[in-house]
Image 1: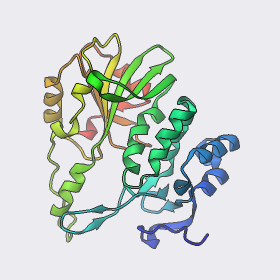
Image 2 (image 1 turned 135 degrees about the vertical axis):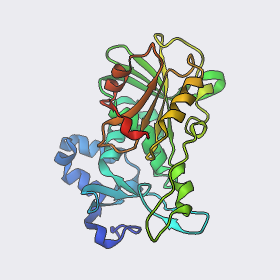
Image 3 (image 1 turned 180 degrees about the vertical axis):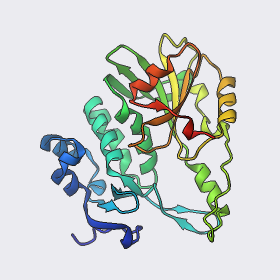
Amino acid sequence: MPGCSPSFVPTTFYDDPRPLEDYILGDYDDLDMSPCEARDLVGALPRPIRSAPCFHFRPTGVRNYEYGKPWCLPDERTIIGSRQVIPVKKLISGVRAVVQHLPRAEREGVLQRLEDRERHAEVLAELAPLGLARGLSSAAHAVAGNEGRTVDWHLTWRNSIELLLEVKSRIFEIIDRLPQTDLTTGTVPAPQTEPERLFRGVERKFARRPADDCLQGVWVECPVKQRKRIVDEHFAEMDPRRLHLAILWSGNISDGRAYLLCRDEVDGSLVLDLFGLRHSEQLVF
């Protein structure tokens, strides 16, 4: 189909580009969907995303689509990457969960935000916990928080566990450090862990309440390893009655690892099981 090839990706990195909707409708088995589910999902997607070029990305062996805009660095370099070349399964996971759990009026508002190329990756990050959650009975989006603020999700599981969850996408560390990269060797300076940026704007969104009433936490999608000691100390200093847990996740939909911080009264293993995740120290250093 003319005009379907990726615009940012070198041609040596992909083969067989076609519109994303053609891939979903024709290869629904690869996505663990029925033909009816595939049609419903395509119908829920904003039209520009349906026509996004979808291709087998040779460097990773993963089926991706291209959507979004490149990063413009202070030194006027332009960088493409995960913001544009996105695994199809990450999109499917989030959109499928929205279609399943949100009422139509709310669903359309959430999914329409995906059309914004500038914020597409951030909206996908917001949908990731919903897509990974197991055994949900209900989900509500943009719920009332503390003092007029809103919290991204109120999730309820069939085992009656409730979780107020704020989601943040924190890829700024990569962007901040890229101008310092040595292009001749590919050497990137060690990341500077700044937990006040990781958790910025989170704490005051929650009222003080006991964890056995309703869990309250933050999910941070951050592809850069964080310094364990600094993150742990910062979490310990945050109000334990406002923030009961924090989950650091790399953003890789196929990676079941996460770094969990939680208060003593919270069952960390149970929290991770709610999302099909496992605690890993490999996401910190």
